[in-house]
Image (cartoon, rainbow, N blue to C red):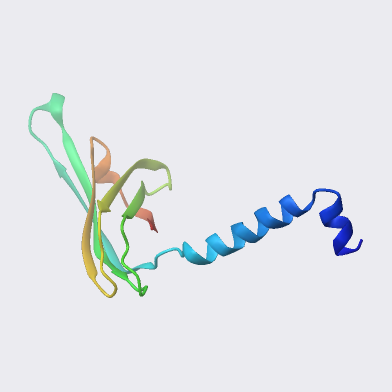
Length: 127
């Protein structure tokens, strides 16, 4: 089909929409939050048998590896027991991170079964 045919039949609106989407995608780059290290600690606290609590904590380092500031950073951790059953999910949030800035994060899960945590998955999102 010729280009004139596209414009003649009103397809120019679709072409213009696609062009605008491509231009805005180039302007709204995703920020680069990189997790550079992390580890897990699990503890059980006992006291009153009716209020047994425990916690699993993942601590680590994340860095803005982009040339632009990151306005929102979120790190999510999914905690698993020895049989790979999901125990719980927790996250940490930071509002602003300059280019090259490092964030020492802590993601804490506090539940009666958190002490069973043996492994975890970690992920990050940023913008």
